[in-house]
Image (tube, rainbow, N blue to C red; front, side):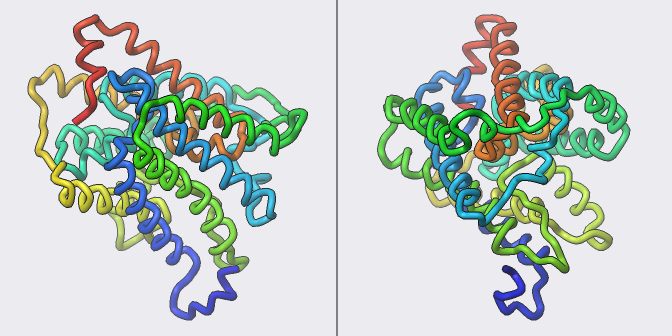
Length: 350
């Protein structure tokens, strides 16, 4: 479709960077206002309200994404999330690591990105360690670990998504959306919070359709992608230190947009606050958590946004395994904390 839009000086990959910035800025603004965070929804002291926000976003993301599939605008047939061989060991172990890491750092990667732009220097530190570790796992010294664990696969055949089950994609999508909305409506959130969460969820199909349909170009293809943070942070790190050699991507634009959107929103609403570490032991815990998330996010095929909010709407079995493993890792790590630390870690991340 991109060829028909009439751009003469802009290629599809260049337009994808702009799309990433727009979606990222919207995500940053909405996530900053709703305090969108999967860790908070699982083990936070206000977990009921946080889960309501997360589930509202998921319901809209599922319905919007599957509407795109139903109309033929996009197809996930060749997407990595629907690969026939499921790297079950890598996903399960990676999810457990990521879940434990986000408990230690008191925030999933998306939340820490928002906090970093809002003055939280702990978040900045975690994201730097996370990005370096993720890049090392994707293309560096830790890549052999990824390939070794990824070689243990489970052949799924045609059952790579919930669409292969009785009732097909329509029934699966409806059940997920209805269950998510039922949780959201009983969460006690204000209507305004749920509306913002719904708008945030709508960014997921906007990303899928934007890259897979609007920017589709046979001569200069753009990868089908939507909201995620693991690979985009690794790409952003690489682009930051070598921008004269490699072009920016959708992911780079997305991360830049999230930082800009959350910064502007936090300044506009007076929530910008400087925060830093209080003790060396705290620094060590956050560093350890960042490493776990960096390695785990790559092994699992995405973070709570990439595999969860963005992946589950594809109805992928791999995405479902990843987000369930992340939740299990978070619960396990939280249970292993001492009661005093468990109470402290349940506090909202600032």
